[in-house]
Amino acid sequence: MNQIYPSPTFQVESIPALEIHHLDKSFTVAGRELKVLAGVDLSVKIGEFVTIVGASGCGKSTLLRLILGLDLDYSGDILVDGEHVRRPGLDRSIVFQDHRLLPWLTVEGNVAAALRRSSLSRAAKKETVREHLELVGLTSFSKAYPAHLSGGMAQRVAIARALVNRPRFLLLDEPLGALDALTRLKLQDELKRIVQREGTTALLVTHDVDEAVHLGHRIVVMQPHPGRIATILSIPEQARQDRSSHEFIRLRDKVLGLLAVGAGACQTKERTVA
Amino acid sequence: MTLTVSADPPAERRLTKGLPVWTDIAYGISLPLALLLAWGLSSRFGWPPEQILPAPQVVWATIVELWSDGSLAEHTLQSLRRVAIGFAIGVPPGLIIGAALGLLPRVRAFIWPVFTAVAQVNMLAWLPLLVLFVGIDEELKYVSIAWSTAIPVILATTRSIADVSPKLVELGRVLDFTPLQRVSTIVLPAALPSLFTGLREGLAAAWQSLVIVELFASFEGLGYLMTWGRQLFQLELVIVAMLVIAAIGLLLNASLQYLERFVQPWKTEDPHGS
Image 1 (cartoon, each protein chain N blue to C red):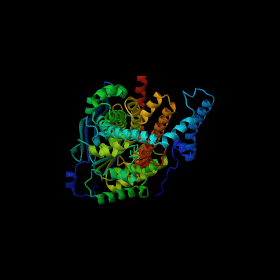
Image 2: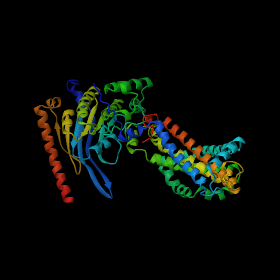
Image 3: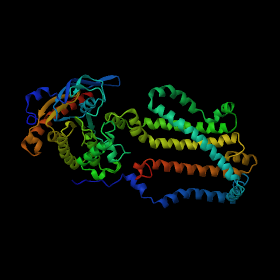
Image 4: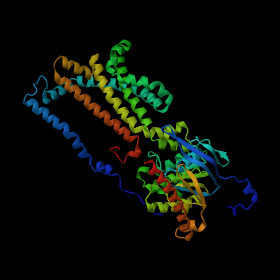
């Protein structure tokens, strides 16, 4: 970033892509208030890839829903490009764990569906759909229906759909969680390449610590009950580049250690309940 | 980049797909043939007596006779015309009311209790009241057929909208769809299979009430043929009318099924439905 924008004034003027202050969120379950997120503070710079890891129930997916603007019932502030989030918008897009393709639309149609609210001309829409299918390597499947795709291919279509509006912010909710190990490894590299190429700011939620270290510039470790940020670690460039590097393994073990503490706390809690 | 396509369809689909068309037809025809044989045998041995259950050859002779003097075609066309008009009157309001009940919670809260109460009462029970309002001429037939068509159509339409996957509805919010886009791109295609079930149920109900109203007040039509046959104690007439109604019902049902497949091209690989 500094190399691209050496002027110090830009640094002052630039606002973070995402700013979260003192975010609290609770659900009412069977008349009782259940706190899912407590005191979350997070700031993500433009072009940054931030990954979030944590055990189930630490409110990771809820956090993404709030950033999308699907749920406005929370306290604290969520700012995207300096503006409060009030509703869903095309500046933010998401890839879910289930691909959520519409079965009645072809691959092409599913990607194009994300452009229904776009102001592009018909020809420009067609062109950008084509470009994004090429980006995920599915040009020859553009007329296929989702039922005929493998899980990995369907998820590629979902990624193309999420990027086709050139969003400022790409949210990824365990996008590779349902895939087999081999496809997952392959798609991790592709995801990294694609996000880098599009220059999108990205926020990825995952269970997979290796994935979090490999993809992110920074890694947010969360703990459950209620969901809160335990720590935020910078990922050294060597760790991102090479999965077998010292830095990668050291950081992965550190994160796993942090999560194991969380899991242990969780277990004792369950034991006392039982 | 190499792509892996999973070639295995789900197991249940493979099972049904393996059946060639002629096997399907042979299976479908074997039960009616067995029943016909049992009918022939039982009448040959005089059980039950011929006045109660006429022999198949007597029924066949009646069909030939009624066909050659043109009265069978006349009665059938008359009944078909009534069903067609009643069904055509009943379907549009059924779809509109059902869609309103499914899409607009306020309308549902307002109308649902009354509608449920009305739907509980069989059309037969409404007949005496209907006669007071519309008389016993053709209008009575149209109104009662339309009525019994509309009720299953309303129920199925409401249900089909309620059953649309909330995950896909959420996708519509993420993509910032307008309400109209949500309905046309997500709700309507998702609801189509249940909508068609509703139309088929509506058609079956239309035929049932046709017979009832024609028994009640009519001088032509298949229902009248049945009444006439019963009064003259010519049960072969009753059976002929029953057979024609069943055959036409089967045919109409099949054509609706064909139409259903035609408007859902994404299901063409799976002709037996899910």
